Image (cartoon, rainbow over all chains, first blue to last red; front, side, top):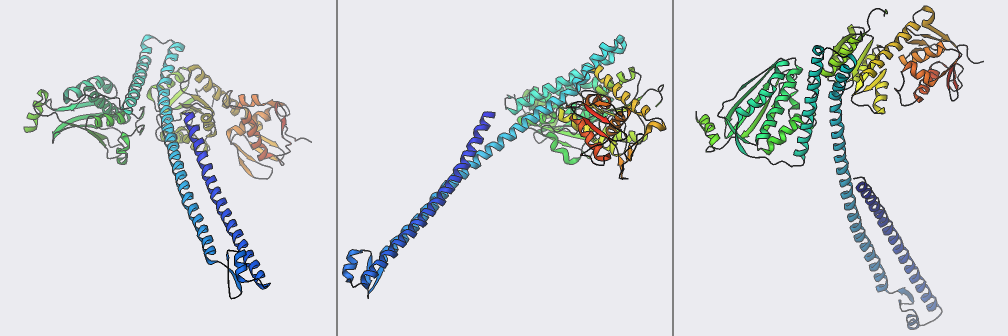
Length: 369
Length: 241
């Protein structure tokens, strides 16, 4: 990485030096030509003067023209042959044209090189910055649950509380571990999505069942945080997706909703679904902290953490993963909120399973009813 | 603050688990503890409450910790601040202390070190307050300058009113308590900041330069804040003849 950079910088310097040299060479050639032309003209002027002197001293014009072939004599005056002046001017202009073409060509070529190298350098810097900010973000995210975990353990050591008093400490430690585990999962997941190393299946899946599995796992936590989850999804709705991707997507959206509602001090989350135009739409509505409407798109970018919820720590990768997985499943995702404190809703849309697939027959009935 | 009443500590931390752990331990040590989960709430709380120490997370929703601390100092509130943060490199530490923090602890931290630092900050402030409690010790006069330690204000020999930062006041206090004696840089660091907070003792030198600029007639040839080469400083109330 560093070696490439050194190499690129060296190349850039070399190219710039070459450009300067080409410029100098052009200047030098031009000056040389100007000097040569001037010398030639001076020599011709001397010849003319010598011819005139010979004529004045009584030499015959024939004799003078024989001695100085470039001179023509007419009416007792010596002059330079017009074709000589002409040839000199033509040669002079030819050289100037040549320099202009050659110079322009080299300069263009070098400018192209500089552009290419500078672009590569900039792109690399960007990637580097992104990577280091990824690392910085991710490692800082771990510091808080780690600190909490260490604090709990050291409290146990320092104070040796009764088993009863130790219970909340242990619960906190388990929660910290769960949090870190979730973060690791998200980081790995997003790295995998980034490299495009995902092989998603496309099979008809019952939406209600997939949602129920995730809700069951999160229900106890929701209860502790005074959050009610109500899900009302017709069992007949069937989507085409990858079973794991469906689970990850629903889980991330629900986790996000839980965090938002927790930030508001409790509330409810409602899951509803409907079928339309060969698609199935799942809407997750929460009564949480919400977000400014303009943030709706930014939410799905990497590392976006609105941090509007107290006690919410995330990698900023959750909804990014949702978006990427939905794209890969030929679905869509969007989020909406009327503003901070107004709750929010996330809408997930998948292609509906085609009629004919055994699991999808029910969906077809649902559509026609 | 009387010795009998427990010191009141405000914890500003948005992570519920970490906050719970910190609060439990502070309570176990006999402190009275309050919690606010975000920066703006902390600032509001501090307008209507007095506490002995603020434990301040740097990354907070609302206003971040550095902003909270700067705002607090801007209001003339000198309550000591201990920063807790995920970022622990020297540059971040310096930024925290420049914002007016008293100490800086990087996450994850050791419980005993945390409690030790809390105790150390409170002790330093206890010392400063008790050392400035009587009419005799509250004021310092030297070379036409007048310093009031209780309100962190001074009047320079020029007649100009000066607002001292708490660190400047503390350094001045330590030097004044040992007037005529040599005080090493390390002693100043330990008394005013607690050990190992700053990357180097150069910081002390910078604070002395600031004090000279405020109070010396000719800061380049000081008569009150004298450098003792290779050791530290000596403060003279009368001025060097």
